[in-house]
Image (cartoon, rainbow over all chains, first blue to last red; front, side, top):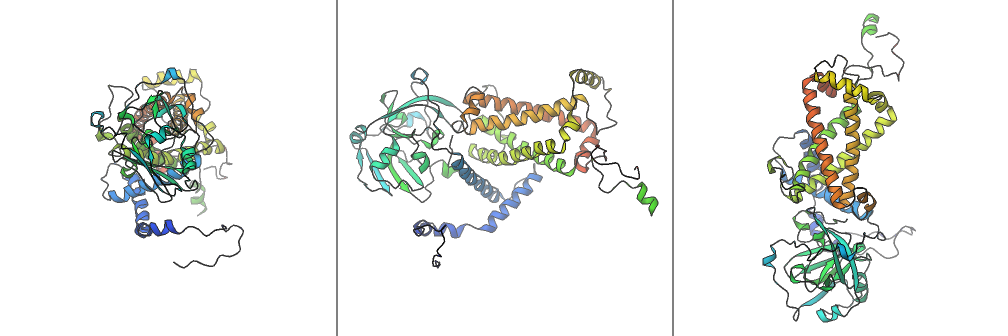
Length: 263
Length: 222
């Protein structure tokens, strides 16, 4: 793809746009078929008039639903006010122990061995040296008493503490202008959040619940605790953090749940 | 030729249900089906009442994520259509013309008449007091449903809305009650429309021409 010589417009960015994202995703972009999207839109339009009939072209309907979900990601990013704080509560309102949820039952939880556990860093991070649990535990802590809301509809008030994610990202020299922060877990779970949420003052890497180390079912030794996202956006047993401009998806996001899922 | 022109209704005579109203009515009907069917599936994942689960056969979306995708698609159709309808009703004066006045004694009298099957439907262009009260009520329920929906969707960004319903579960309950009222209205509304089929036809064809007092009557007096 030829890049035209920049004209001296005041609206043109000083630096050329980073082409790496385009290069990484070239294959995906070539797969996106505008005709397919149009066909999907038409099928959906027809569907509204044919309620009760079988939907023959399921793929087209799915692609429209996904497109609307992506549009809703954009709307939610627009609605997200980085200075708006989630309501906080008192210690007396905290649920002990917290409510368990994962893609498997609580008796299938495999505890993480803290001695061999490491937090790996990758992507747009200056200092990629892995962190041990002792190093993480030595960082300054922030406490949050906030409402956990699950996409299923239940909620509880939890008391979480651990290092502030923004301070952690600054400390390791992460590119804070990157788009996404991806978290991968010991149980092969994963989720990613937008940088604006990662930098929100109420986003922490939680190591404690109700002032005690988090117990195994709830993510020991390290989990994410945002105050502005649904529960499934807060992975437990984190083993790696990646800062990237390439959309990283996530376990439930890849299975059709809305990516932004901001509260 | 002149004779014909005098007796034919004016080509642009105002209908009981102008085209814009009909389009918005049926758009709303479709969006409500999407919202109710997908909402039932979302509800099933964490029920408010232990005795109440909606059978999968009458839900929309297949799995939870599919239902959520449908709900957040239907949300746009429903909300934008409702916004358009409310603006239309206020700007054109349709709300005042069709829905007011509505006094309690009229509602009581018309309810009695209806229960004795003595309520006249000769002129379907004028709503009786029961219809007026129900239509005003359902419009308000739909508006509150949008507010409780926003309170559930964005309990941090729109936490002031969530607080209107006490807390997150309060907003969920309000959203559920709103759904129940809408389903109740839907059942009554459809049943009555089927009982007086010309009202149903009017929502498709536009119904009889009306003199709504906004335009001077045609010179022919037709």
